[in-house]
Length: 318
Image (cartoon, helix red, strand yellow):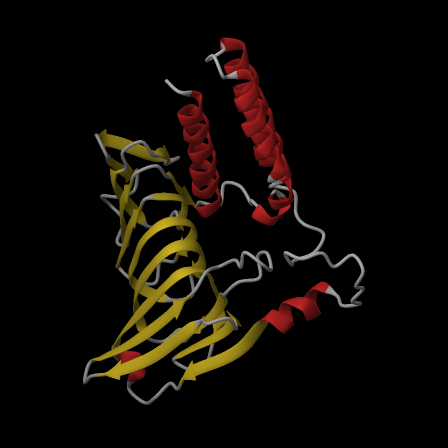
């Protein structure tokens, strides 16, 4: 096999591996840190020309050795947070601005609310949340039906909030496009703080490619909570205000933590492939099915369906 093909293969594997790890949040890689080291590849090319006119094995070993050492150095260097957030050199410029002011300069803060109308407490209320890669957190109660504080990146982000009203049902659609981190300004991306009214019965559907969800639902009447996503960090705490609650999670590569009350009986059904499972206090009935000790006798039940490829699933009782 020719050395130049091996070198290109190693480079492509390195770039693809770094991009994959960065996209899934395993590492934080700053490509601008390694851009200034591009001349080293000219050195590798020169070594290849000098030592490989006769397909010298020694030359091949030297070239591959330099490449491996270089890529190892770049892998470490690329994970070092830059002293500034821009590609160009700002050593000669001094800007006296703190972190909060810099973040506020790059993002807009928006507030939205849907009023709570007479009769809304008796209606089914469906909340559909979708977004590319954002951070969602349920902060607490509101006198409105629904409220959201949005911290939005100003560079081309799109936001949509729509309420559809029927005789016995309200549907709230919240959609936000964009990434949770900017490649230029670090982790200063889109985040949303939600506030919900405690009176309606909620059905929640969350869909996102990547990002994080932190919902404490103990004060809310939640009939269903459904999450469909790729790589995500999900922390959900379920209450016991309804006789039955369904929790359905379908992910690719994620870290899922679900907390449920000890007073509720719970059954877990899993289709989790190579995922890890931590169901402390549950009895395994058969492959993929688990039950709490009080499942049969409890008047309130929680049904959890977990479907994931390479994920970490944890269900804890509080």
